[in-house]
Image (cartoon, rainbow, N blue to C red):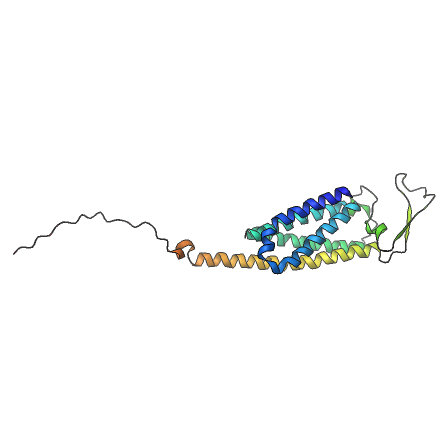
Length: 227
C-alpha cells in the first residue's frame, strides 16, 4: 500500500506540473480535468492493491497519454493532442472489454487468471474482499486443492458485488474519455484555425516588416544649359 501511494503521488505531481498553464488559462475546464486526474489515480491505486497487472500497465500508459495531451494543449502542439485523441479510442475499447469481462459476456469469465494477472497469481479485484458491507470469513480447514501459500476465505454480505464496482469504474472512464475526445478535437480545431489565420496575414508582414531595398548604382551627371 505504501508503494501504491508513493507512485500515485509521483504521477499526481507530474500531471500537476504539466497542467499549471492549462489550468490557469482554461478555468472552465478545471472540473473536467479534476475528474480525469482523480479517476485515473484512484483506479491505479486499487489495481495495485489487487495485483491486477494488465490494468496497471494500461493505466500507466493512459497517465502518460494524459500528460502528453496536456503538454500539447499548453504548448499548442496539435500532434500531441491528436495522439491523445487516438489513444482515447484505444482506452474506450479497453474499458468496454473490462465491462464485458466482468459481466461475463459471451465466453468471457471473470474468474480467468490469464487476462488480468497474466496468470502470475490467483488474486482478484481488491473490491472482492473490501467492497461495501463485505464480510470475509476464513475457511478451515482449507480444501486439499488450495495452494499452501494462499488462504481460503468465504465472502458474504456485500451490498455491491465487486464485478459491478469494476463495471461502474470502467463506465466512468468511458464517459470521461468521450468528453476528452470531444475536447481534444476542439483544441486541434482551434490550433489549426490560428495557424491558418497566421499564414493568411503573412506572418510577420502584418507588423510592417520590409526587406532591404536595392540601391541604384547610377551616377548623376550635371546638365548645362546653353544661353
